[in-house]
Amino acid sequence: MTDIAVIGARIADLVYAQQLSQAGYSVVVVEKSRGLGGRLATRRLHGTLVDHGACYLKPKGELFRRFVEILRACHILEVWTDEVYELTEEAEGKGAGLSRVGFLES
Image (cartoon, rainbow, N blue to C red; front, side, top):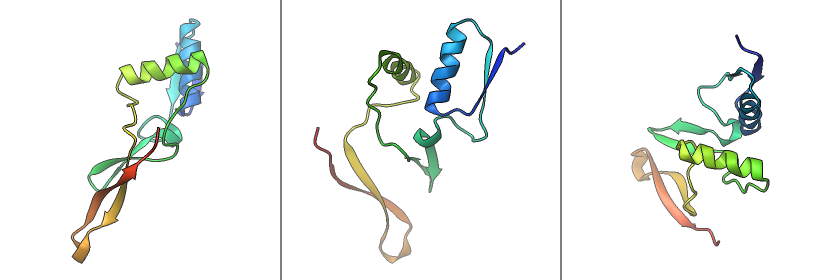
């Protein structure tokens, strides 16, 4: 039997569900989309994966930092490489292409 239903699978919802589960509650997360993450989700576009929304996380609190480490260990989040790419149209209508447009300063 489920004690608590968390509606939505945004990053805050997932942290909330994890805390409730660690406190001993039986938790189910319900999400209308195919994946997790809300604005941090990865979408499928033209045969490739596209991240949209917030482009990076800088966890400030210890609880959030630990949660991000769990997501990294499960390969849900990855370390950002600081490379920026742009989806462009190829010449002569050959389809979409990916071109590197620069690096971000650390």
